[in-house]
Image (cartoon, rainbow, N blue to C red; front, side, top):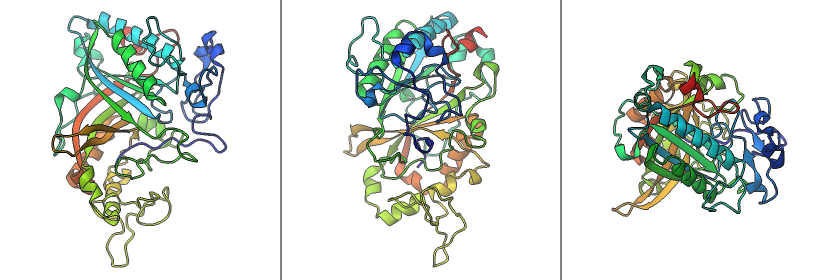
Length: 416
């Protein structure tokens, strides 16, 4: 199952305490412009800030809004996420989009500092920033509506249809995309409502989804996250700072997108009742890894490279021909890889009584045509796991670099 892996922290550091820290008072005094931590400062691109003591250690942690890349891509995964799609109002045009992005950027920056907003609803008044991040993306349809057709990147074309997709248009696509992550669900919800209010008259909500992951500190040490199937999910995620990482994840052009990325989002429902009825040995054969520790069935530990040629005593392949990790491996897809950052979701029961639950799959990549598309095409043709999944919503967005000093997200596109 494709999914997230927390980025590795340097030896002796925790998953969020490994970046340069400053006091919130210093930030509010105007030091924010210099807070970005580069690839050499612990987690690549991470920018953790200390809080003001108003809340506990978890709540006090903050992530700077500005930096070389938008926050919410390289930072460790938070416990809660709000995802939202918006469509630009017909009369908004380019000027309205610029106004909206200024509003959103200003609101997001204040919230990531743990500040209250004018006429705040006080939902998160007692909490600190809780590692809040807000990430913005631009869909293919935005460019025509904003008079920016000539600036739409060639790579930002709608994804092709994949076999057995059952996509709901009402929960797919959108001119604008928001990812709001936090280690407290109320903080994420509060930020979503604030950004929704800021969009009034300029963009209307198209869809909204909520997800969750493991709360930092819930395990004795940072571990690969488990999905709702109980599998360790994301063992082979590329690691920030590793050789070739930037080339896999970050776009080099056009000029306004340099340092940005492309985001594919899929809402993938898991057929959990069917999956749970499989014996564990069969589940492991479908994935190609042991369920207990994530080790490949070819032997070793979780991070031992899978030996796709290894055989069982009876001469059959240790990792089955239709095993998920075999078909998803970069070696099987011309080197295609993505930075996956997914969240689980659980939305009650469907009319037939089965769980409406699964994965909100997020994948950041330099070029979807050489990342998500070839991998999903191969999985759709023969992945044994596909029998237990339903892809029900989808979308593709260009995620620009972070707001420049004193500016707003997307300024390079609108004013460049």
